[in-house]
Structure formats: structure tokens, C-alpha cells
Image (cartoon, rainbow, N blue to C red; front, top):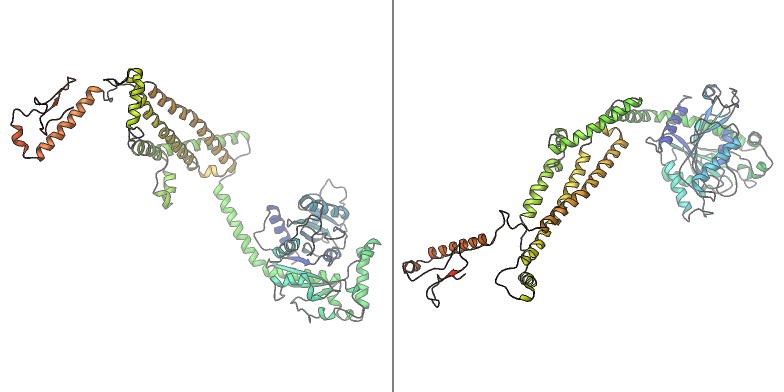
Length: 584
């Protein structure tokens, strides 16, 4: 049973080191208004003066205080060999901070100074507050195993660098700790004020309305008005709590100024309750020693109740971690040569995966994508790049382009007029006008070409992430570095690719090759026009039966364009109204 609290403290240290707690651990959380005496109660429990003091708010960060009893001498075996102060004396007392591992503070004034320095490090020196906790362990033969959390006292008016809503912030901070269903709430209230106005009990009732896990502590009992006492509160007659109330007496400010030690104050407290006419009848509910024993008893049995649930959660977390560790594989060797081989192997594996995706041989990635209904309907990798080239660029862009788009008749006439200059109208089309108009249309191919490069670049980046594998995922920094290097390489290669496309367009614009077999020259253009005209005439004759007689009339001569001549032969009667007479 004595090892339950240290066991929970170890879990608390682990969660404190990683920055968050995945399990609600049992602990005693101290709440109350400012200057209610919370810190003094903790000092009396420890028996040493070690907490910051002063006017106004003193506790500005949560202090997780873990007490370890060293009577069995088990904690001296872990002492620092370089520390000359440790002589394995069972009467020694020291403190250790979680943020300074391995260092022991045998001087409790140094513990106070370190708490102040660590508080100022996050909150500043002008009364700022923070919800980041300070973890302190105190080892002493004079304490019982306990875990206490000292929270900032609730204040009404902001001072120094405190925000205007400081009261709300402190309340939210306190609620964050006491909302833990496994936390015991130690509500500290000054006995010389109305218990109904207690901020500590008000906060406790918000999360524990039935008072099941709340312990009331009444301070300043010795300075109550003469003729009054708190026996009714201790008897649970005013605001009942399942775990009851305990009255204590702390050192006054005058006692601190007179250097009255805590041991002397504890003796003075014991004498007060033993000699008081009413309190001596309920002495088991009075005094710091009874408070410490009660808290230890409550915490141990509370941990015992919560232990099965904590154990199940720890086992579940351990299984999850073991599963994740197993998925990462074996640890690489620490030998530098082996590490180099491992690095080369992983980079080669990534390169092979990338090449397989381009060539369509990556069946593992295809199987992974098949489980995703959205990606299963999409092509990726080399097939996607082929689709970009053949479909998006050629069929849906180049083939759909109208060569005369953006080319109006007025543009053609203007180009011809500019090419003829002062000579005016010409029988033949000037070569300069033709090339000017053609260059303008060729330049339209540049934008689709550059857009095609962007599509391919995006797909290559996408393939980079698909080339990842389980072995590389074990090393997140290496994986991110590979992504960064590959993406930078692709982007660097995109610049000369864009320049190449631009140069190709400029080459085509620089020389118009009219001798190319695919180019329709003057002769081919005339043949194409005659062919279309003959097809139209044949269709008209077929569709009009009245034209059969006219076809037998030798005087009815249709215009025919000779493929080898530049003149047009027409009907002998130039004034004839024959519908079959076509002039070109």
C-alpha cells in the first residue's frame, strides 16, 4: 500500500515529461482564494519553509508537489555521486525538480529561489500567471507519501501584468485540474470569514456537487472573533462534505518576521487545539498532523479504487506503443558504416519505387489505392502523364484549337496593305503578310505547352509522395528531406523545360517552312477548292431532276478550273443566266 503513491508519481513524471496526461491520475488539488493560506498549509505538511512569499499573488504557476518518505533509506541509493552533501543520512531532506533532472537541492531556500526563477521564466516578474506546472519532489523522513497540486489563488482585481480577466483565467485553470474525476479537492477557506462566501468550496461544488471527493480545510482558526468558533462547520452542519473538514493554524506574518520555525508553529498549533474548550473534544479533526494522515489515508484508498482502471489504460497504451514500435521494424545499427548502408538502401528503394510508378510496375501502390474508392477511379503515375500528353494537350487542346480564332478579315486586309506599302493593291498575296499572320497563330501554341509542363510537374510531385514506403516512414526527418530534395530538383528541371518549349515556338516562328509536305501551297489550295466545288455541283444535279435535260445541251458548259492553269474557263455566253455556271 505504501508504494501506491510513488507508483502514481512515476506515471505523473512520465506524463509531465511528454507534456500531456493521457490518464486521469489520482492527486490532491488545493484550491482557494488568494491569501487563504494554501501555501502555508503545504509548508506545514512538509515541515519546511520553501514556497515563495510576499504581498499579492505568490503562486502564479501550478506546483505539483510529490512527497516521499525516506525512512526506509531506499531513495539514498539514487543519489548523485558528485554531490558531497549526501552522506546517506536518513535524516536528510532534499528536493528535486523535474526540469533539472539529477540535481538535488539540500537548501530549501534554494528551492524557493528556483521556484521563483522558473515561474518568472514563463510569466515574467510582474505578477503574470501560467497554467504550465512546476514539478517538485521532496524527500524527507518527516513526511508521508502524498501528491499535492498547489494552484494560484483566486483574485478579484488584476495587478501588474495580469490581464483584466485574470479572475476568469484562474478559475478556468483551477477547473482544468479539479475536473479530473480522480482528483481529491482540498478546498482551503479562512475560518474568520463566512463559509458561504468560500471561493474554494464554490469551485469544488461546480465539479463535485455532492461533495464526494472534497475535503474542507479551515485556516486562521486562532484569529476568529472572540466568542466564535468553527465547530458547526467541522461537524458538517453548515455545508456538508462527504470527507468532512479539518481545522489548522498557520504561522502569522508576525511569526514569519520573528523567524518562528514551522516546528515551533506546529507545537503552538497542537497546544492551541489541546487547550481549547471546544476543539479538544474534536481533536481528530484539528491540526496539521491529522490533516496529513487523513490526506494520506484518503489518497491511498482512492488510488486503490482507481488502480484497476488505471492499469487497463496503461496496458492499452503500452499495447499501442508496442504495435507502433513493431511497425517501425528493427533499429538501425549505431555503426557509421552500417548507417551509411542503410541510408543508401533507403534512397535506392525510393528511387526504384518512383521509377516503378512511372513505368506502371508499382503494384503495391496500386493495391493501396484500390482500397480508396475515390483514388481507385483515377489514373496516376506514368499513365497520368501519358493522359496529360495525349488527351489534355493533344486531343482536348491542340486539336480543338481553331486556326482562325482571333484572326478577323480586317486583320488580313491590314496585313496585306502593310506588306504592299506604297504600291497599293497587288494581284498576288505578299509573302510578308502571310508570315506575319501565321506567326501570330503559331504563338498561340506557347501557352498550352507551358500549361502541359505545369500538369506534368504536379503529377511528378504527387508521385513523390506515393513512392514512400514503410521503411522510409520509420525516419520522418529523412522522408521529409527526400521530399524536399526531389521537389527542388523537379522545380529546377522545370525552368529549362519551359525555356525549351519557348525556344521551339520561337524556332517555328522564325522560319515558316512552306515546302513541308503537310503545308497546303497555292496549287494544293486550288485543287482543294475545285474538289469542294465539284462535289457541291454533283450534289445539286443529283437533287434537281430538271437539270437532266440541261446536262445534254452542248451549249451548257460548266466552269472548270484547270489544275495546271491560272485562268478560268466560262460559258461562251457571258450574259447567260444558267444556274450551273460557276465563276472562280
